[in-house]
Image 1 (cartoon, one colour):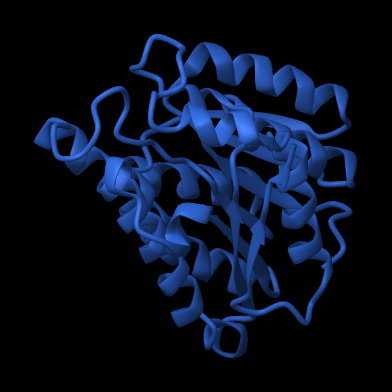
Image 2: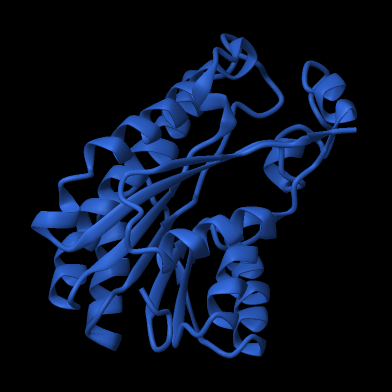
Length: 247
């Protein structure tokens, strides 16, 4: 797919991988990038960067865990642009400062809702507008944690494994709807999620030795994979893991 003139939706766009990829989509020629997140103030910062990169930014404050709010996002995109070409299902949260099983049940429920439910519903809601636009590309953010047990972050790892299997199960959509669904699995990326939003800006003790042993990825390292998925029409239900290099 050629991104020139395309309309893209990026969830988790307030910072980190979402923000970095939104800017890269703009630089690659997207006409508009819809920025979705619950963090309104940081979305404004992302919007300024997207505008400077050459695309029209649209701020949509919404929680991907809410079906009603997701429906509103896609309805607004359809009303404003009449098309949808790219969806980057990137929003995600982890256990925070408290490891499994000490994490509050409410937090565990939120992890499932944001990381997995949001991906499933976002993909489903994007299908019809993408079909009407002549086809589209969905890219889901999973994690390297999807591939092996991660006891301190058991809920997070389970949801990310679910995203991988959901992506693989979406392979037929390329034929039925003209929508290619692919998945990127980042290693350790230098983002706020790594520092744990509820952890006081400190890397959890169990993770520190691993962080010390590798070079952290930049959000743009993930963005390049997303752009490759979009550009290469042969990529269908592919899972790409972006690994850290050892120090």
